[in-house]
Image (tube, rainbow, N blue to C red; front, side, top):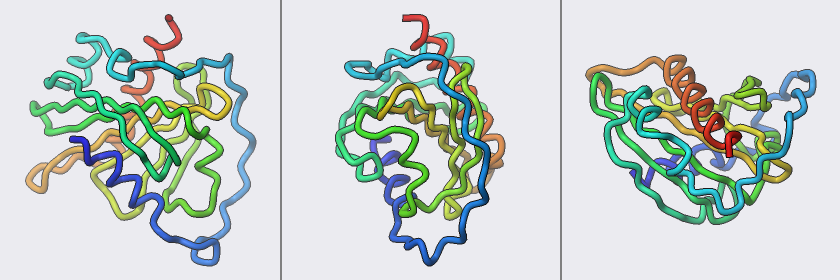
Length: 183
């Protein structure tokens, strides 16, 4: 479980130069965040209640870890959880205090992004083109900080469509944000 974030970080930050990447279409600026919600000292394992985890199909106990993540250029506190029924899924929630949503505009990332909103906060759904069994949602919670929610799963025998994984990642991000903003 601890390998999910570093593996995806490596795929997303794979050496892709600006010359390899077609220019992104210009999009309207994202909406302003309704307020700052700082993640300093936040335990990401505290962001989903047992009821929320069950609603997301997660059956394991949360597992906390802290590791250096190149994608986020620093140590990141992460919580991972699994679900096995009806689908085999893995959720990772990270309280990123080392960089903000602007990281996703940098040219060294290999991911397709689309704007969305989570609990009224601007967010991005990000999917690396190399992985079809994964989706992440990046929520702009404060200047220089973001909530990273990764949802992966399926198996070769019963894959989960990537659109469904992105929907579940948004649902998990919304549940985590509900807990976070209520503090």
